[in-house]
Image (cartoon, rainbow, N blue to C red; front, side, top):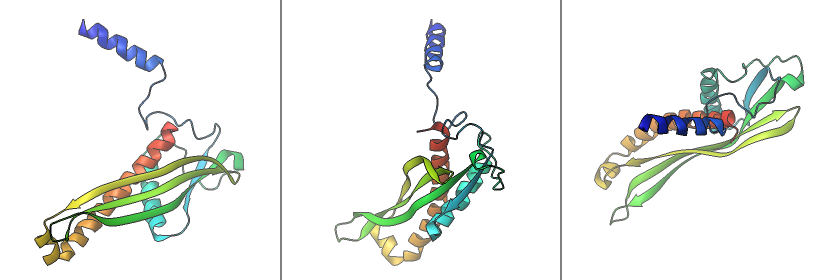
Length: 172
């Protein structure tokens, strides 16, 4: 009985157009597009996210190749990272007012252009994580916070790139 119920639910979900975010072919990239280029505005945060986005793009089969030598503008799209930022802020404090928890956030917008016209935008994509520690350890060794922040920022940039491409592929 459970097997029949499972099959019915599965058939209903697949027949109604339900799909997982980031799965399948993108419905955002116009038909006939053969190449894409990735660019940024040039700020340091943009360049860091651009490197991660290039790496993530190469791992996805459903996206066009990154051949910037397109023969026709209609067969080429340009994806641009805009407004990238990184924030490292204290979010929790102990009784004496010393920070014991920090939040690290990476954010930015992925925009798609064709023939210099905006055809799709991801909206703000944000990846964040917290760094915890007791006040004594954090004040006695601030270098440990910086080391943890540097390791975490790399992970968040990779996560941001995956999230941005998932939005692109899903059309959301």
